[in-house]
Length: 261
Image (cartoon, rainbow, N blue to C red; front, side, top):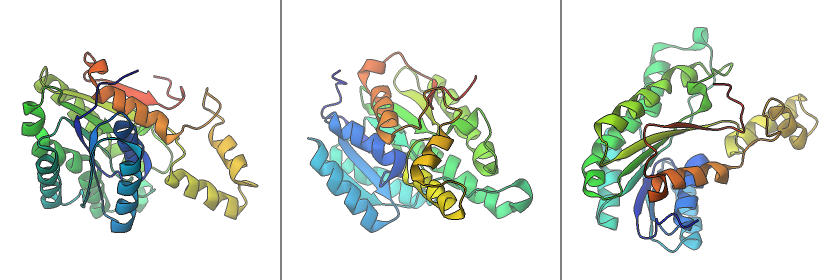
């Protein structure tokens, strides 16, 4: 299916690796000009080179800390200047540390809120006028299935990410029809974070090897496997495209059917 993204300009935050990178790659494959950001300069440049070799559009990499509003402002300005505007925004971020309520102090809450919610708020604020000027304007926020169903040990993600869903639902009404806004809710997907988790459990003796760990993680998933990053990236690309022109305010799980509601 031609997603009609050729020549469109997209900013994908936190896209030097993981689900952000998978989304950027899917968009680049469909011909979009893609801007990415990350904090690690080496990893960011590696990602830029890979995307540049993948698609036909231009690729821009900007070093930025999404918890710094000045960095976010600089990121959006650089993107709009390089591409002559901005058609689509995809927000992503790293995850907060695994913790329990009694282990979490006040500063942990503030840091998680800046990382998961305010980074999205700041990026949307800076991008709004550019998206409004576009005939295609879309916002897609990558969150987590924990906004629907809590995961043990992920207090901050369980609690704070839900603010993004409220934001998406609200702006999908406020910004329509000029700008569409949706969220995707990834489940267990084989990113570097999952690989590290499984490897650590193999070292502790929980699993005999990596493959056994993957099988264990997939035990409750109806599709009987964990997801691949590109499977999320393709959905993000679709939501950004004119092919999804009547999809607005949606929360789409990408979890193999794990969520029950």
